[in-house]
Image (cartoon, rainbow, N blue to C red; front, side, top):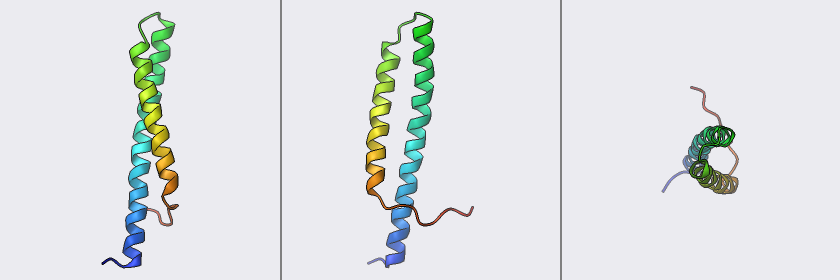
Length: 79
């Protein structure tokens, strides 16, 4: 079995993984928002982009809710 310090390190690393996924989803949600707005302003079809944006926002919302259940980070990366 693992020591308490190792278990805590695993939880912190797990939280960092969630942060990476949240950042990735947030970046692509911003990209899709810009594309959707540009498509709307130029009278091009934007339904597909808007649905993709909705899917990303729902995934981002779900990840944020899951992230809240994890303990707060107590350490930070030095490298």
